[in-house]
Image 1: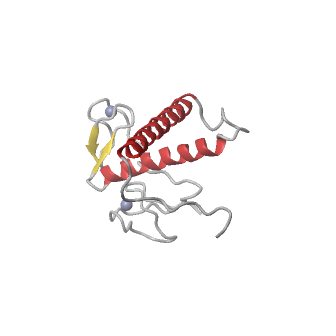
Image 2: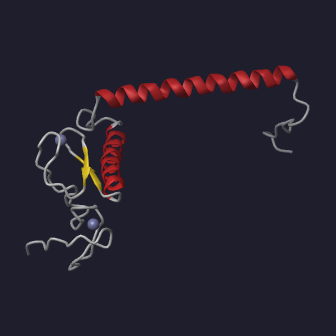
Image 3: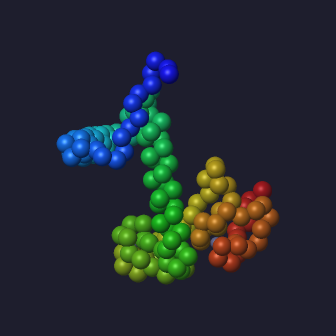
Amino acid sequence: MGLFDTKPMQTDNISPEVADCDRQLAALNQRREEVIRRIGLLYVESNDAKAAAGTPYEEFLKEIEKLALETVTLEKRKLAVQGLRKCEKCGNVLVLDSAFCNKCGQKLEPLFTPTADNPRICAKCGTAYAEGAVFCIGCGNKLEQEPV
Ligand SMILES: [Zn+2]
Ligand SMILES: [Zn+2]
């Protein structure tokens, strides 16, 4: 009917030559995607959001930095729910309540520190809590009352 009507796609009875071309096209496309992914990785390894300020890459890099931060927090939480934490200096895995690393002697800071986005989080497990809460609903830790 219309000018742009195309012949209906033949789904059955595709000739082996066409099927072979399709396979090769898919493989080429996949290789292209892989190269693009590697370009992205290379760029991310050698640039940060600051370096990319004002370029179209800035937002992507900010997103990646945000994801990296969330990954670190989630990895900490994963250990914390098992009653463990890592020494930030040497990577040694310790009991969550440790005050010092038993391998390198590093004094251990609170695992989770509040941020502007998350002003009230349990220092032990990173669970957010409501204003005025006394105990963490995530781990039962007695919460520090913030100075008013
Ligand atoms: Zn250590
Ligand atoms: Zn907690």
